[in-house]
Amino acid sequence: MSKLPAQGADRPKNGLQRKNVVMVLFTLPVLILYSVFFLVPMILGVYYSLTNWTGISKTFDFIGLKNYATVLQDKRFYNAIFFNFKYTICLVIGTILLSLLIALALNQLGKSSTFFRSVYFIPAVLSLVTVGLIWNELFLRALPVIGKSLGIGFLSTNILGNPKTAMFGVLIVNLWQGCAIPTVLFVAGLQSVPKDLYEAATIDGANAWQKFKAITVPFLIPIITMVVITTTKGGLTIFDYIKAMTDGGPAQATEAIGILIYRHAMSEGKFAQSVAESMILFVIVAIVSFATIKLTSNKQVGDD
Image (cartoon, rainbow, N blue to C red):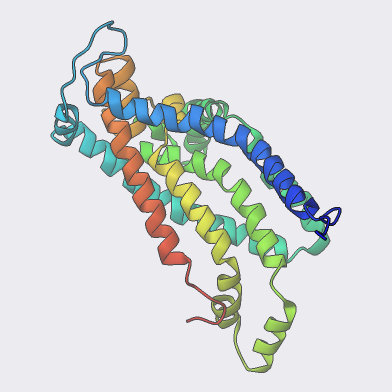
């Protein structure tokens, strides 16, 4: 006599299938958006970089790697890349040092730090272009007046009008706004460090620097890694501040790769070449980000 299948024997299997369907439905919109706004433009970008399309012409020809060869022989491209790397190094170092110093100060305030964190976060909600235009007016009209009245030479003229100081003017504005979010993140990271570790280190005779290096920094490594990656990406792709403040001048002193790509695409009719420059920039950002993750991911608490 054959046995009848037990009721509910397939329920775990059906429940698992239903759960998988729900997960697919939740992730499907993300995959669609990712494909539409990233993968498809990336594929089209690679395709157009192999053509001579001007961006408006109805017909174009396939020319292979000629655009990439032109880019790699363009002195303006190398000057722009050099500017971006120089700017990015200054931006990363400045952002980490300033944000960490402000976070250490705020962490000592205790409960009252909430108000100051809110104040420091205000610049983060402002538009990049708006901030650039505001500071442009300050550098042009307000600071020279203050510099002349106080007898400070470097403030007596508009620093954005000097090829030697224009980059630092843009950098100051970027740091003023860019330190807001890292500061809040560093404060949260500092508050997550167990107090017992500091007490144990004090008993062992460690000074403030030793405790900071051996305890605080390793706990902040995940935040530092994220800040370095996002700041590096922001430095290598800088556009808004420069467009609003200097437009690549004076004398192409602040012509970043983003400004060069914009000019080639919109002003000089070199759309396909600008796409090739964008592809090269994408590879550079990916390599730098990957290298940063590898260099900072193995640090552990207690490492020297």
